[in-house]
Image (cartoon, rainbow, N blue to C red; front, side):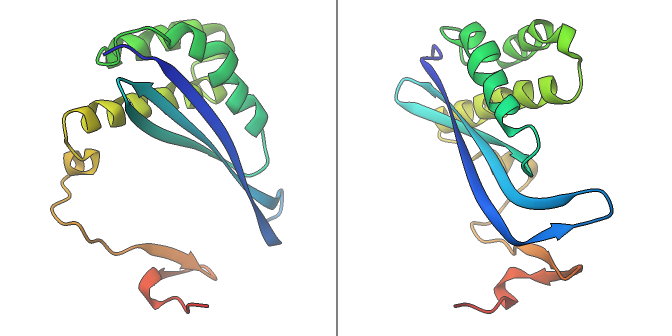
Length: 150
């Protein structure tokens, strides 16, 4: 099971009105979606940002990590993780380098699970197809099923 392709897509959602605290104003929610492909299957992950460093996150995967990972055995997840750590060593073992490394790692686990016909969420103990989603609305936890619909 060789890694045939790694694709990234930058998705941006405006936050209107912006959310602000004492140091930041959040105007956008950005996701860099990472897809790892092998033998007709895909594994997915994403990196979250709020208009800070999103292009850098995408470029780290596209320009630095993708060329090193293509053609590797997609089931050698630990080895790929360690090689990506080594490849980004001089960028630091935290922050941006770890985000790209972790995004590929997560997508590989998702790819492996899909190839085995296994839902990755089951590995964390999920036992049902349904689950309650929670969100913070005006700072208070709220079940999403209680949200008004438009």
